[in-house]
Amino acid sequence: MKKDMSKSVNVSKNEFPIPLDIEPLIHTIRDQKVILDSDLAAIYGVPTYRFNEAVNRTHNRFPSYFMFQLNSQELTTLTSQNAMSKTGRGGRRTLPYAFTEHGAVMAANILRSPRAVQMSVFVVRAFMKMRQMIVVQQDLARELAELENKLTKRLNVHESAIVKVIQELILILNPPPKQIPIKKKIGFQAKQTISK
Image 1: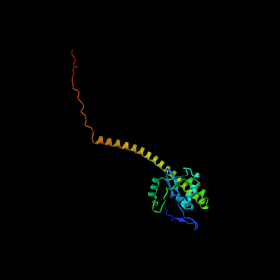
Image 2: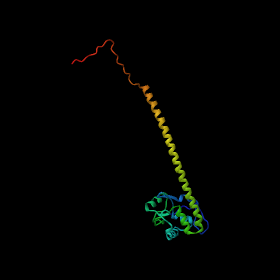
Image 3: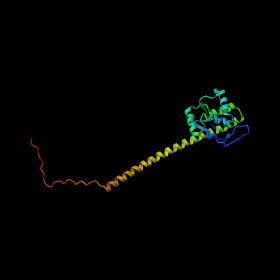
Image 4: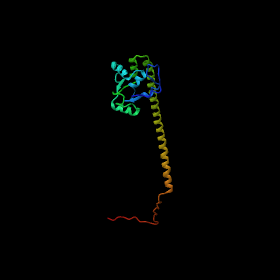
């Protein structure tokens, strides 16, 4: 699961590169915004296996709403979407863990390194920005739905007016055949009586 770290900065020679843009590392899985263990490990400056060791040692600090392990279908979807390395080609041999915003902060707390604490602020900011984008998208979707309703109502009014005009034009161009009125006979007409 190598990530393109070309857009990164080295804090010192001993540390891992820090991704400048954390937002692309946040995925939506099981209707939650999460970041994968390998990405958090890179951000916090530790190897993924060391990161997972620290998490496993303190697993009681990570309830299911802080962290969960992906299933194989979710991993396949992520692999196809993000060009992650496939198993058997030097990549992971276990299913990755996904951390919610709270789980990412908790992971920084258990690592206790100055870099992890410093970078946890950037991770939280990235999650907050993603939340704000979702709210803006929801507001925009609501406004578009309202606009669509208004336009549909106007269209219905215009459509019925156009249909009425067309019907009138058809009547003018193709008038119905004139009915010849039945002429009454002139003169006296005796009423017929029925005899019994």
